[in-house]
Image (tube, rainbow, N blue to C red; front, side, top):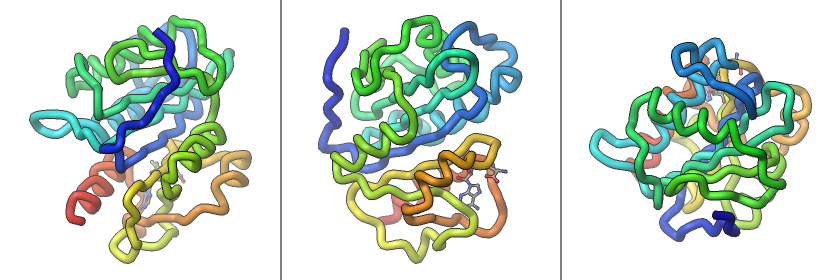
Length: 205
Ligand SMILES: C[S@@+](CC[C@H](N)C(=O)[O-])C[C@H]1O[C@@H](n2cnc3c(N)ncnc32)[C@H](O)[C@@H]1O
């Protein structure tokens, strides 16, 4: 099923994580997620963004950017408003990604729904930024050197971009440089911890 993705009104938190080496296509070994371009890091980030102890955060959407391997980049969207059929464990989430990696990549911007609440398309972070901008999402970059999140004036629809275990590359830095940087403290943390802290801070509002 292919449809134009429309974002539900309840979506307020938009996360984009960039997987620099995680392959966009091909096979994924569920027994070696770290060896698959640090897919483990990405899967943990999805888990932290979307899952509560008993349920799914229906205000959050995560866009996973798979930029490794031979083929073109792929984006996978996990939409908390409709997501179903995924358990909050790494293997279950990775299993969904594995199935999608076998499929041809749809053209940039055409989101194909694979299972309920999970879509994929071509494109990279510039395409995600373009669609967030159209949807009036205020874009921020997670960066230890930014403004502390406690001092940030949080808007209704917040977009948060983070990297995997690698720093943003020069191409990304050029694009991301114009946006506000949000810090969660001076120490560099793992991505999924950053998302958990961000969700906690947003929950307090
Ligand atoms: C494991 S870190 C990447 C570390 C990598 N060596 C670097 O220099 O970017 C993954 C992502 O988490 C975010 N991050 C880590 N620590 C942070 C902090 N203290 N404040 C804000 N964002 C942070 C950044 O977006 C970073 O790209």
